[in-house]
Image (tube, rainbow, N blue to C red):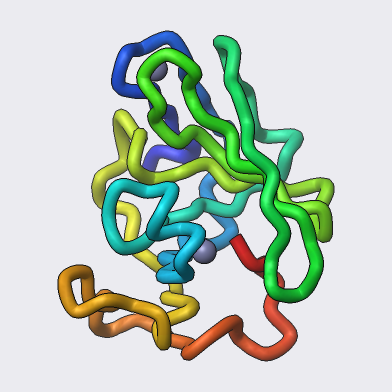
Length: 143
Ligand SMILES: [Zn+2]
Ligand SMILES: [Zn+2]
């Protein structure tokens, strides 16, 4: 069984790799994830920062969440692909996007959050724990 994963943006200027498997894979249907994703949701993989390596230059955009934390969304300045996010409430974690994975297509989503904000054209995945907003006492910050 393989451990870890790697990904690259559309133009290939930015790559990431992780030496650890995700603690959780979360599909988030909040409006910020919809607008930054190109579709109705983002799929975030939570991993310890120590396991994460990024190669290439990234730009970022900061936006606050409902609870007042700051999410920094990093993207490729050339092709615009989302790369990863960080959250001011969890400084030892990073949240690479599953959308630019180059391997591990068998990994599955752990939970869906902000389901109350999902659109009919991109419905919430079935068969996983689903929360209208964030799960109570979540280990995952808002993304
Ligand atoms: Zn790129
Ligand atoms: Zn979100």
